[in-house]
Length: 150
Image 1 (tube, rainbow, N blue to C red):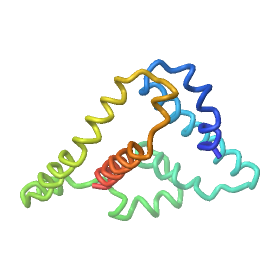
Image 2 (image 1 turned 30 degrees about the horizontal axis):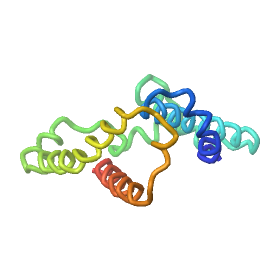
Image 3 (image 1 turned 45 degrees about the horizontal axis):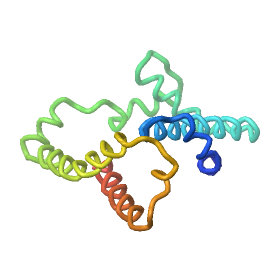
Image 4 (image 1 turned 120 degrees about the vertical axis):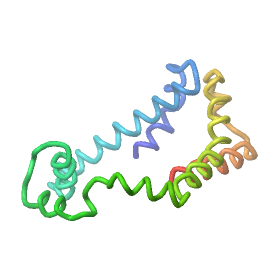
């Protein structure tokens, strides 16, 4: 629903942004705020509070908050902070350096193209792309997605 509204209101959004970067930021903020509002509204209307424990877990991790669920989860080793020796072991086996090199190699092309896009002024014609440009952007988007999975 939020993406549909952003798409419908694209022409109005373009009037407020001098560069492509600001357009992206406005779209991202609209998506984030809209999604949160829809989630809260849906939870309120349906009376659902199934995910309240996730906020409590985060609160207990960084404050002194405790209840039954948070004590049950935080006692498990899987929910504890990573040990200091683990990154050292990964570095000694060359796993961590190889992952960083692969990540840097994959992310180089999308970052270069994103910098070029941010330098362009924001125009309606720059938003409408040809089929070939969309295919190229799709492959760059896939690279970026897979790099973030590392």
